[in-house]
Each structure stands twice: as structure tokens, then as C-alpha cells.
Length: 363
Ligand code: MRU
Image (cartoon, rainbow, N blue to C red; front, top):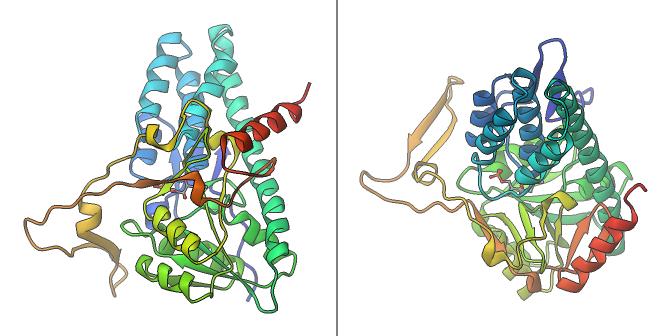
């Protein structure tokens, strides 16, 4: 079979004056592109999780702000559009990071110059995200090479931190893709990631397209797999990492970290610098998104006739609590794999990372 076309999660269309994104709510059954043009369509796409994953949310919002400014470059609109985009989802700090980058690139400019400058900045952030993820992959590959055993390397991951969550490569999956490309045999245990099943619907789809062997397991199986020594390391992404190294990521990450520690399995978080919130002293300060209880009480999937349907699982009147993220204390994290290298998840390690960031900035 020919290799499937290489995709990335978004592209700017000058022809349609629109940002084109994959509607991730339809995967893995349909690969459909959406065109985002109005501020409302950008906000809806992020809120409804047609685009999701911390870096992708940030870059999409940057394009959304640019497009709003091309339509009305006034300071009032800069503030209005920035606030509307910022309010879409609370946990991933990349959203605020990207909006701040665009705002500071354009606010001192003449109004007539703001739209194009904002678009150029969004495109720059997109390109930088691709480079950062590729570099995370290289640093992660070095770590994986140190773990190499006789058989395939077994990596466990949670949620989706692949190219669908970024632009290309991904964060947690970047080392996997780099290892696969380098001929290192890998197999990925994909945790399904209830309630929205990003592992089963997105990560397994991505890995299968790339020809990387993977197996989906229920979230509840992961502890047992870690105990049975069939996992060489766990790699997850992050939506916000605090200045002390605490890692906030998809709900269920913390349980994997506990089980990994109890069984001596290394547990890494892979993240670009845009995911670090230097203003958050610890994970306790990170706002955790609460989502609709229907995500827990019902499932959506494709029926035998190919129709997408939502099916109620819970009995009438059942209530659910649905936090979308949790915090893994730094003490349970073996290392933070970033585009600048691998750092200890501690205030000292983060200080080293900050120093490395400043020394690698262009003069
Ligand atoms: O709710 P989601 O699907 O946006 O959550 C995504 C995650 O938790 C990812 O693991 C995280 O954003 C890291 S992505 C590179």
C-alpha cells in the first residue's frame, strides 16, 4: 500500500483567506477540513474541540486574532477579539502565550499595518512550533536510545500529543516518530483517554497512518501493564507546566505517573517552552477545565450504516463530574523533554531551562 499523504493539522489558505483545519471531532472515521474565517468560527472550533491540543489551540487563536485584525484593526477590536479567543478554553497556557505574542507584535503599529503583521506573526509562531516539536523529537530520541532493549521499545502515552495536537510531529509522539524514522523498533500502548477518547480516536489513527505499531488499551489497563514490565517508558504531553515542574495534562495522566513510579518505569512529559507558565508557582495554581457531563454519560461514534450517533450510556437522572485535566506533581516526573533538551522537573531544572532559552535567542 502506498504511504498516506503527509498531513499537518492546519494551513493558511491565501486563496480563500481562511485558516483550514482538520475537524478533529470527526476522526477517525472522516477526514474533513473546515475553513475558519470569522472570529466566531475560530472561537467555536476551539471551544467545541474541532481543534484541540495545547500548541494547536495557541496557533489557531493566533490566526484568529490576525484575521479579526484584518477585518477591523482598531485597538478596541484587538482587545475584544483577544478576550473572546482567550475565553474559549482555560487550561492550556499556549492560548494566552500565542495571543500575547501577536498582541505585542502589532499593538504599537499604525492600524492599517496591524492585520498583515499579525498574520505574519501567526505564521512565524506556526513555523516555530514545527521546529520546536522536531527538536523535542530529537532530544526524546536520545533518551529512548539509552533505553534500547533487544525487542521493540514499548512506550505508553495518554490522550493525543501527536501532530494533531500541534502542527507537525507532536510533543509526546515526536520521539516516537523520530525513532520509527531512524529504524528503532517501537510499539506504543495508547491509553483510550475517556471521556473524549483522544487516545483511541486520534493517537491510534495518527500512529497507524505513520505505520507505527500500536495497541489501544482502556485507561484502566495501564496500571496493570506498568506492573507487568511491558512498558519501557511513559511519555505524555502537557497543557501547562508550572515553574516548579508540576505538569498539568489530560485527566488520567496523574494515575499513570503514580503507577509508573510504583513500578520503576520512567515517566516523561514532552513540551515546548510555550507550555510553561512562569507565573504559576505550582500546579495548584492551574485552572482546570470542567466540561459538560454529557461527555461522561454518553458516547459518540459511527453506527453500522456509517452515521455518526450519540448513544446514552448512563441511566436517566445520573449526574457526572468531568474535569478535563489533572496535575502530576514534579516529584513523579522523570524529566521534561523540551526543544532545548531534557530538564529536571524542579525549580532548579526550570531555571536551567530558562537560561538555555535566553542563550539560544537570536541577538
Ligand atoms: O482536551 P484536549 O484534547 O485539548 O487535551 C489535550 C492534551 O491534554 C494533550 O496531551 C496536551 O495538549 C499536550 S498536546 C501536545
